[in-house]
Length: 248
Length: 296
Image 1: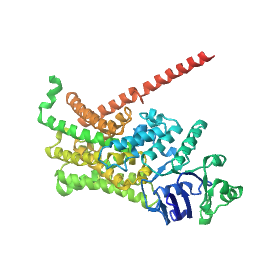
Image 2: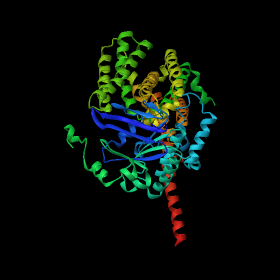
Image 3: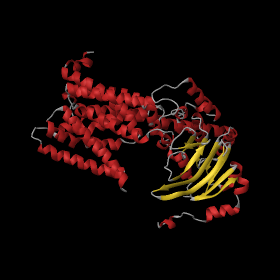
Image 4: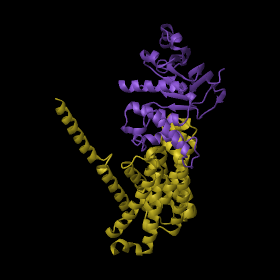
């Protein structure tokens, strides 16, 4: 096992005792963009949330840099779907990015110079410096994604977990976001991105995870993103509701 | 200047003034959390469920403030935590559970109060009377403020994260469940400290209106909290003062002043007010029209 890798073995996550993800295992190395693909209800969001420590694991373990991850930690940053965020919250772009530092500062202590510099650098990297005093609802969809990415950078997270970041973005914003992803990958971050537009997979990702309740294939796009695998992923319903005696 | 200061020459008005400053600030500060956590209606239910606790307190200890305090505190906590338990164990959602529990609690308060031998008017608890606050009531409000405010200030950042996005807060290791319970307890303590002054029904106005007003004026979380506190003090004191000259009930007057301030902010707030928004829309339209004409 390489030291700069995320290693997942035998991961099972259930909602009300019905597994949404079944014995999933894979290894990913830092500095890559990984597409998490699969039909609706395949467990894409579940996988991201489980990695972020938001869901209890029924079985399995997650190791990062050779260290076992349990629950919440600073290395992983979870970026929620855009419609899950209250954009009218009384805070500015800078305010959101500063939230990334809350873990490293004691609750009641003031921000240090180091914290301020980290926030500045994160804003700069995401080209949001000029907009830092804006209220967050006064941003475009692409800018809103960049604010949350900047927060993950301020947190100094190495693994970024993004839930459908391209949903609802216009074409120029999508292009901008693609550029940002490439930049982050070059910096050695590991990006796990749930995604549903299969057409843009080859230009976005260098690796994919094909999910449908269980992991059907994982690996480089060139090897794994094949018609055969896609048919298996989208055509079969491995852990469908029918198997559990529920109405569909 | 006499007309300004004259009301406060009476001892009961001085006590009322201190009460206004204490509970005005406490409620205004707490209001920001309640609004952003979307607990406003929960706060309403909780305030009503204080009644049975008060009744039990009166039955057991007479009108002793400490008996009333712990009676009401336990009643509100039973309803708040009971609703969460009910919601967790069944398919019933939390607001539904709360609605059932609080109306039952309120009703049992009404029933219990009819057994009380001491003559206590129900109206007194429903609307409060800030002119009748005792020194003990003031000490209670002071004590609650000294416990609740430092804790809220110390936990300001994790609370902000929790209010903004609970799932991200949890992924960053913020103790979400603990802070949620802490907020409910702080809310109940705040309401208890204001019960004597504004009563069960008007509590909510003093709690929410200042924060809602400041929310229309600023984009900063700390400013929302401190500004809400300051506005709560201003509204409570000026409402008290007005009620003296107009000869009307003080609690209602305070809530009306705060409601009026909210309306003003709603209309003229530079960024989120109705009038600037309409004006800006037309302005922008004109600008784009001019640009269009220029191009063609």
